[in-house]
Image (cartoon, rainbow, N blue to C red; front, side):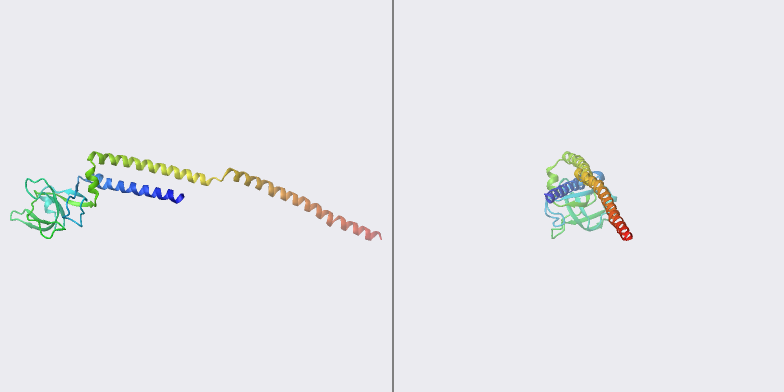
Length: 228
């Protein structure tokens, strides 16, 4: 039974840690840094970003941010003017026009050809920072309010669980450090009665026997010999 309790405890900790990691990675970190989590809805970036992954994107705002982009960066952009759908592909070429503005050519990792357009900084919305595979399915099912509530509930639950485990561990150590009452009573009684009683009995009997056997018989024999 002890190993079963240990197994259940480890499983609970693993589930809690995974849930906490997802909430922190997909909600807390983007919220603190002003990043945007997006869900991958197609397979054009596989195997880098599997379908259903959650990609966290750092905003690219203005010419200066766009000029910092490099070949190999994964960016999120608007493919066409007036189209609000977002695409996330990798930069494969970077060039500059005569007016000094950077233009970018992109391609999906799973595609065999480049995208049929060049992007300017006005079309680029962000640069991918990291992703969590398949977490987009969970994120899509939850509203932002539910995600925020989940952070508070999970944080409070972790604090309560940690406090309970600490108290139980302290009580367990305290109970193990105290010997049973019967053991203490028996130990004290045996320690007080046996050594003292045995010592006194042995000392008295031995002293008397030695005195009678060693001195009185010898003394009588000497007197008898002398009288003859």
